[in-house]
Length: 601
Picture (spheres, helix red, strand yellow):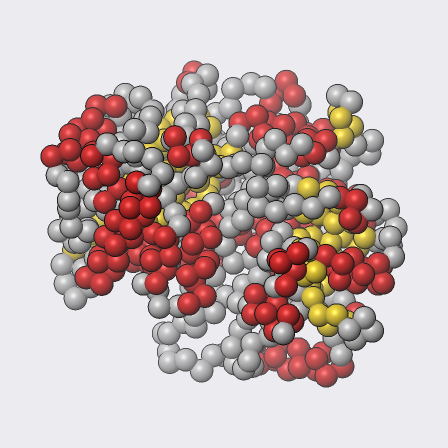
């Protein structure tokens, strides 16, 4: 019965059967030396995830003491003592469903390589909670550092002769054209139309934003090699981590399926190929301590389908029900309650803790290989200032509470709604930074309108999460200043119901060489948005408009991370019941839990 429950929890991920030990684990060999698995759990959680003692028994039976575990779960999410595995555990925590600080990819890839280079018998074991997104991202980050892909595991490691024959048959079938009607793309298509990262790798994607135009940077690989290597690594991970489709005519779901995580792997590919934007991750501390280049985010435009009556009713229900829950926890002004119930469209910009990222980037510089090799740890770089890297995560100070916090919000200011009538009505919303003045105007409007219908093609207002949240004081039309080299998460809301989010690093989407006033527009389709479920399924496209600032403006700092009272108490942004009701609109049961979990991060 327990194995049946574990199979349900594993979903479409491959599972490993060890006939000698009579064990079945949520685990897969990506290569002979790289293993990914679900969280090694204890207690009640062990009833539906890998039991900790089973995972240890399996690893010691097959690999003795020649394994090292890489754990990507924050303390806030789940934890266990390293001595469970005799101290052979390294932690690199970041939240589920999210992209990490980019430096974590470098640090993990280098440590894996350093461990495996120590002896041919060694293996690296990567896990997060489900053993898919975060673990897969880091496994791919390491594999991208290899000169060539490691030979897939021998049949006796994880496949019987029959399974190997099936694999080869499926490879032949997958090479055949699909049976769909002409012009129709499969929902699992991994070509340019179905795989977001392929669009970024090919014409019209990231490479067209002049990122690859770095003539003064000598590359070890040609730009054309970058997409090829990344695609091969992603395909390898998918083929090993995901369950085989029930029909040879179908393709497996993507192993690393979250678009932002795949986008991060693309950034990492450019760094490995020495095709990254000029000035990104300077080699010396002196250069790193100079003010970073700045961009101004001027506007985010959201284009989406008009909302159906059923979904509009569910949005109102989600907003009202979540607010009823909150009323029992904290008193709120009439304006705040109205703000939550109105269904306004707004965007939260967030990032990781600045000191946390600075610490990671310090270690990235210190451990970088000789000659600027990104994928190899420099010899003797285990210590800096009397510390080892593991010490940075030992006390959980970075990950025992919310790791990603908001620093600015965008909303509707004025009449910025465009409508397209017809059989498939569309609306286009232009969202700009909220200043103290226009936030005050919005608040007055909320005070005078205690109830409002959910948005349709007739128009959408904007609103912040809480009437009491602090809003960054901005000059009119000044935009939001961003560190061009730092990660940003843009999270879209309709009232308290999240619509999806995406992570990006501005400099990878800006023209180079840098010149003041140069502009760029990052365009993302729905397939390039993370978790566009429920109401977010109506998204068509998002555009982020940015411009370079003068070098003299580099001393300007982005807004500080400003959490609301709810965020300070660890409750985070709107989620919970609202997210669950939102997921119901998809009609897909498996997406209900996914949407709820994603919204709460």
